[in-house]
Length: 288
Image 1 (cartoon, rainbow, N blue to C red):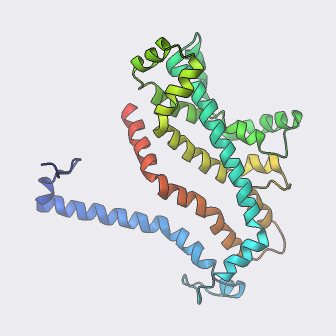
Image 2 (cartoon, rainbow, N blue to C red):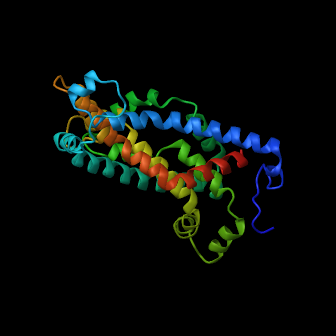
């Protein structure tokens, strides 16, 4: 049957009463999980429509009026447009560095395999066991000694040295047919030409996944941008929200609306590319 579905439960099995009851139970559990996961986002969004008096006195989830002008006021008050642009610069540079530098290292470990590549691969895997926070102090000291603070260059370079991205690229590159690489060598391509003209164009699925992770990581990152960018004009959204939350004159309704502004891009990004994310998780599980 061309229209038959494939999976754990076949169409034939779904016609039995026991399987139908089990499917209904699974769907109900999934629906409850979705509602529990979406409720905090819904509550924060609804709380943003309240003024300070209503926010402090009312515990109702639904506000008395849906006044979008309050969101506009908070947006203009915080100058979120400038911070959005700064976060965009951070994310764009992080994506470029994450694809090029991590892809090159994975290309060397998975395809070129020079002398000592196993030791380098072991060090990459070992770095995954180390908490990222333990490198903050030496990393920040090196940034200050090199006088790279105040701009995004250290943040971009940090995205280009991500062991998780290297592992993702390496798993994908190891599945390449050797005949493709050999054909490029016969045609006279150098190793770099093979990487840019053959390997990367054929690696669009994993490049999309790494791009998503890099954008989400750059957008959500706070500690390193706070240390590197400080209180200058290049503040990202997360840094701006932290500084705004520490001001003595802060209104909690404005803070709630600013949290909504910070959540919008990651949510939109997930819904646009959820298929690529789930496919990568499944493929990683199969290879593991």
